[in-house]
Length: 126
Image 1 (cartoon, one colour):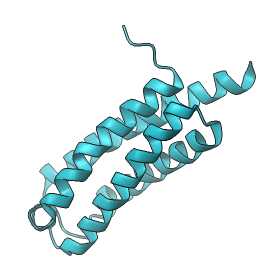
Image 2: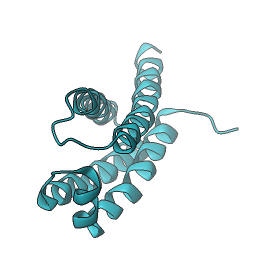
Image 3: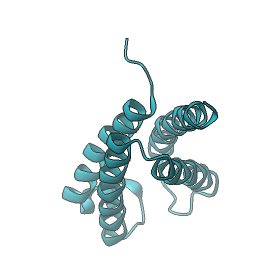
């Protein structure tokens, strides 16, 4: 069984985010149409942000940077909050399938944030 220490959970976060980022960069137009009334450029920028995020999460995991892990955890929490807001407000009039997909992704991100915070606390209290 894999131990969910800080290095492992940041690596899981990075490896979970990177394929999604590459997909939405390559298929920005298709993803924008799938999401509803969204500009493809916004989707492309989101994908580029996720690539930078993934690289940062992986790097902070390899170096065991507590401050870097806190930044990643904060960004994860912001992602979850913005996902909940997106689903609640639904400003782009997206389908139920898309809203459920957003919530599933937010659940994965919340899982990562929870275990990252737990690992950070275990490292800083010892």
